[in-house]
Image 1: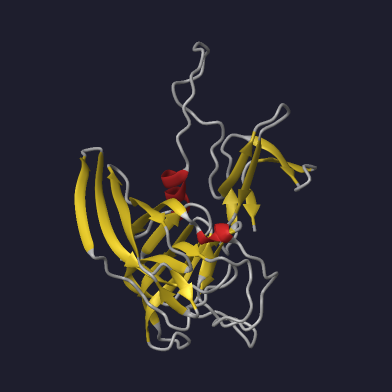
Image 2: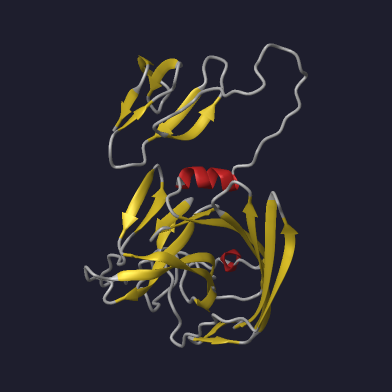
Length: 314
């Protein structure tokens, strides 16, 4: 379900206008079968909305007819559904979110950040100078209540439709709201609903209104899936190259087999190949490079020690 609401905030914080208007139902829906399989099946869902054009004096005004095309793709052998959301954004001062029902009510979420997976509850810290907004960043994936969502870039999400007081122990959310677009015209701005003071320089940012054609790629899966593998499968392209032929290499193989850690980069060089890995879990893990040996380097590239065999990562 696509939900569009007004956003009178800035690039730091979402802030609802004084007179909010939420559009969560389309005027029309058309479903088209694009491909029937058997290796790939695709459905296109075309929805038409009437979104307010902008915010004036704290109220959403005007009307822009907007068509959103959502393509759902299922590939044989994959547990995820790939999603592409396309639209021509001609509105300002608004936020577009995809509301996804959770298979199970959730009291918390887990989202990838820089070299870590962070668990968050249903509330966020706030104070006199900034309201606590439980809209959190997600780098490549977020999961909650048996649902995993992978996406490109850094997006924002929130657990909504909470049963009870979000701060209570028994509170549970029924829906994950994934922000597809946040359209605002200010880097920071003076007093607004969610923050009485500017968070930074008061500078206009017309490009942050996200005008024009938008194409957003994401994917969903239910059950126990590896979110890192899911994100790689969905968004890392298969690179194809043409070789001269010959040689004694087997028909398939890999440069290095990494087990027990996530790979952030593989960097080739004349002297050695560098493999950068990290442990995103709160528990120690054992890094196993198979029959390879090498050196542990620090962040400056200086050799710390030679290793041959498994290595424990904190």
